[in-house]
Amino acid sequence: MNKSLRTAVTATTCLLLAACASSHQTPNGGQSHFASFGMNKVHYVIEGQGSHTIVLVHCWGGNSGFWREQVPALAGHARLILIDLPGHGQSDKPHTEYTMDFFAKAVLAVMRKACPDKATLVGHSMGVPIICRVYAQAPETVAALVAVDGTLRRPQMTPEQAERFLAPFRTPEYREHTARFLASMFPTPGTESLRDRVLSEILATPQYVLLGAMEGMFGPGQPDWALKKVSVPLLVINAKNPMWTPEYEAYLRSLSPQTDYRVLDGAGHWPMLEKPAEFNAALTDMLRKFDLIGK
Image (cartoon, rainbow, N blue to C red; front, side, top):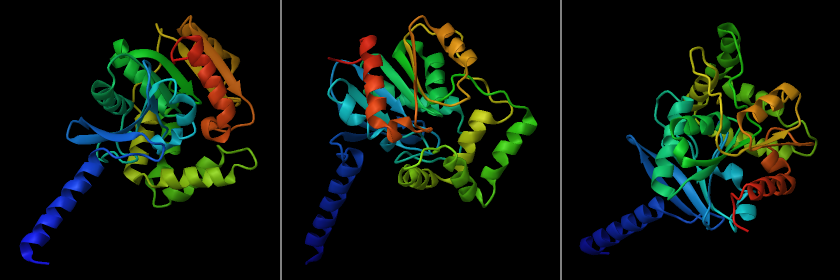
């Protein structure tokens, strides 16, 4: 191959690769995109279509693929935006402070680019404080809040308790600690293979991101994300767990007159992956109840 032809082929290949990187099709058939957030890029996937928009925000160390079981159930009724938070998945991974407000601003950057109107925000675990901060920062963009096995108020810890919790994530043995930490969240027999897949994907997230996000939630001096009042529907799906007390349910119901609270039995911390059919039925029923998805 002569030099000019080789140069042309190389240039064409680069252009094709760049096009694929900027917007490529995902396994479910959705389109992959990036939104600018300061000097960084936030990756998100658009699935489905409809007049309603649902934004899905994953957990600590997770990625947009953690909602893979929900896409088939929802894509025919709404436009779905599945976000990789900064530091996670295909998004940029800057060395920065991974606070809940930082994540919330990244979600808003995606929404400004991809949402023509208000959106229902669905958060799992760490995604719950993030959607709370989105609502606090820009309530006019939110049609409803959906909390999946995550707390809507910051747990009370002394600085000493917080440090004991955070310290293992700073050590060279953080991977082993994370494995033990996650194993406790899969109490149901038969979920071992799912547990291992979740662990593998979480450990693909850099240690400085995992630690920074934990510090952003529980570090001394970090603000509470609790909401005082909510003027939109508040939908909650929790796995059965002693931490979800009657007092906590009463707190949730005090936030909004449009509160729907449900508990799934027989699942751990990832009910949308452990019991997808039951979870999807509950979620779609709640969304329909408040006219948040199409028929």
